[in-house]
Length: 339
Image 1 (cartoon, rainbow, N blue to C red):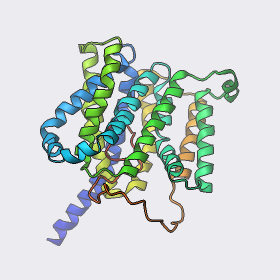
Image 2 (image 1 turned 90 degrees about the horizontal axis):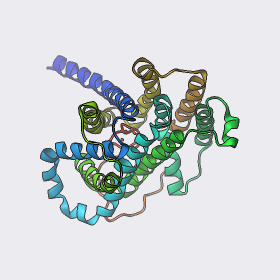
Image 3 (image 1 turned 45 degrees about the horizontal axis):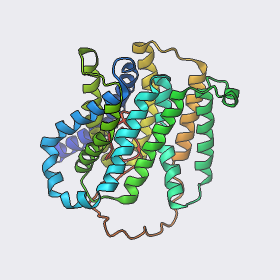
Image 4 (image 1 turned 180 degrees about the vertical axis):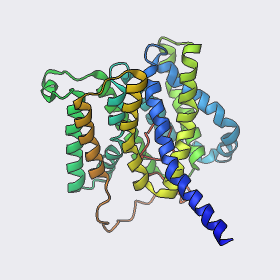
């Protein structure tokens, strides 16, 4: 019996270490899908189709729990709607728009900075001063991103020579980082999958008017597989694997896997999309990721002040942690559609 338990524990530990790797691999594919969607399907169309399909797939499994918790959903609907807007609509919509004018490699490096952005926004939200390590990490990452998006010529910032896609991707990542901060702050007492389901529903409703006002792309053979990948593995599978890693390994160890995203995307983009790798990718990406690792490392524990009382909070709610996309972001909270 002891030998069986030991073998089972080893199997569980192995799965826990592979789970976040699987999530990052799926998000790598989704970054390529986002880039491949350019010219094949309009950003508003793939965003709507993706979340509508994910909502329909989850409905048989989660709708009953959502109905059972309808009182909480009714009371906190405005918070759930804003979370769905930030994660499903803003983050994904901006990412698909950004892909028109930036490379998959640039997108992946910017997405990998999400844990650091989350930490910085969390500090601002709580009026806490930045630690020296976080400040240095933010400066190093900022320098790396500037070097990356200016193709190794930072002076271009003065002449406005930055691609619109890079700016949109930065806005998307900041939007998703804000999502993670609000998710922790509000602590809505819903299970992870129930909250994800409701947020996807609200996000789909937010995207709907943009879809109606845009050039609507019908589903075709050329874009159907892109929509399916974004809706199923990226929106449902990746969050499951990421949450498994969070529970088994903890948020700090799990977040480190995000540093593999730019490496995996660069290799796959070179292989399948024909993107060329340059010295500024290596130098800028390395500096940005080094800043993330420096700024995200836990410092010496400080005495924690009790959180402000929230009569709606519950110890049974989702436990957010640094996290994608998809593009749903991966390192801000488990209850989030993937990047």
